[in-house]
Image (cartoon, rainbow over all chains, first blue to last red; front, side, top):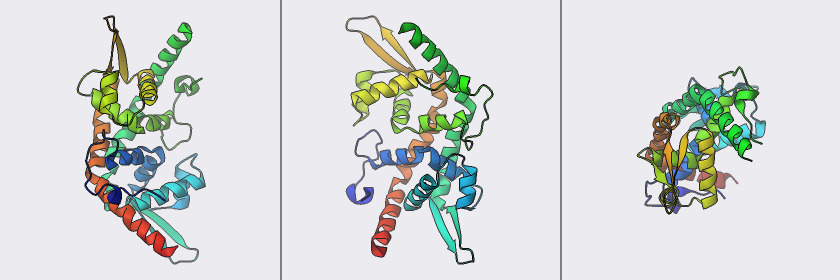
Length: 133
Length: 133
């Protein structure tokens, strides 16, 4: 049984620092690496499952299925079944999902721009730690 | 032994969709809920451990310690020890950490603005699922 915040917190406090604030769970949701990559891929148009799987290297079929279902439940993507032979299923961003593109894209660009600085800092930190120990 | 991306990927491919791209690990790092909340708290000035723990409801002492150490290793925050009695330790954003404030703040604001829509979508989805099963 998955938690539903609407029934659990009918008058929500919007304060992600509060332990019981539903916005905090959303932070986990949108912070997920697979979520970010799927949302960004769908930002340039609907895609089939196989296309998503090919594009996101290293994601397992099970993880992709789970993440897509979770995004559909959250109202961020839609799943459309086309009754053709063979059956065609396409995933697309909903209007709500589209509002998430800009913030996620900012995070992904940050990661692309700054990963080398982070890695350099880690190397320095680890070298210092091994000197001490 | 923690992985260091700089030595592992001397000529990095900046492509978060690639399985071996270091920017993807950074996505996990900055996507962490505790990381987001700590970075935002420090964005208005240095804080002591006890202040951070009081501000972020529900975080355990162990999790806060681990997250702060990890953020220090990543070069996003600094830890300064003031040789007073009693000892004072303060955490502050580094210049690199400051560059992360805007993207993280965009995500947190998205969560604050849209959590009710997400919760409503989950309720509809769950009601539909229980009808089917």
